[in-house]
Length: 98
Image (cartoon, rainbow, N blue to C red; front, top):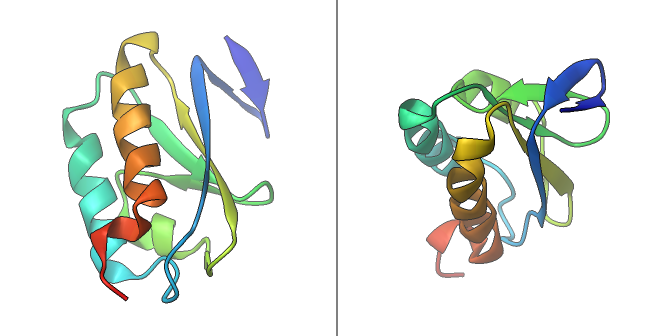
């Protein structure tokens, strides 16, 4: 386990918000839906704030605009594939055509 901003995690991935609209309600809801089947907690962080990835409101509180670097953390090693899935979601611009 590694510690970051006061909490412990097993897996981390780095992503960048790619789409012009930034993190808004639709992708926040999609991420919160993805983590419902996680074996442990999953968090997103912009390096200053931490958001529970299961909470749409928490995710939106990051105010992540295009270009924001976001770290994805999982409590359990077994959720590494889920961290990869969330990173991919960021990488494809949340699947939005711009």
